[in-house]
Length: 173
Image (cartoon, rainbow, N blue to C red; front, side):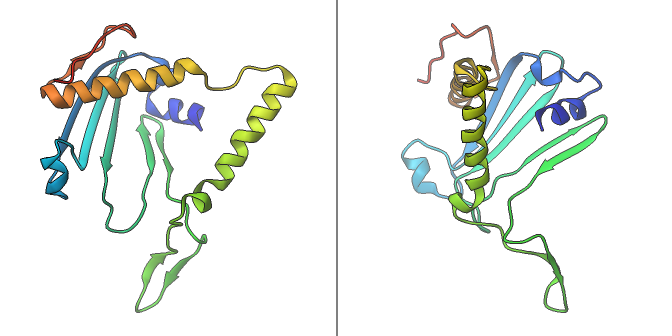
């Protein structure tokens, strides 16, 4: 899926391999003002810009009126890729009461992610048996933490954070 995503984002199939150069985060606590009183947020948006100009946007909320929800959409010069919420079935109902209504999304995380957990374990076993490197490593985790820290600093300081490297320190005061 990542290779498809990369090809869709631009005419350069290595678009996502470009380093992120800036992070801008915004947040609010209008869904649950009590969270705001504690100095936290309930709704956030983060925009990251890669060195080649690719835009990555993350929208997040602690509350979703229609249940547990997560999706990924990649849109680019060659099309769009969507990884939507898994549903209870693949059918859509067309009646007077339900004009084009899809089956309900799976709510419990084990129902949603069971096949993903199985694939992770299978990948680990395969890589171990064949002496191959895992597709993700500690640097991927470090980069995720680095970007999260930059987003937190952006939110707290209300400004775009220009990234300079993994040794960059962020203040959240």
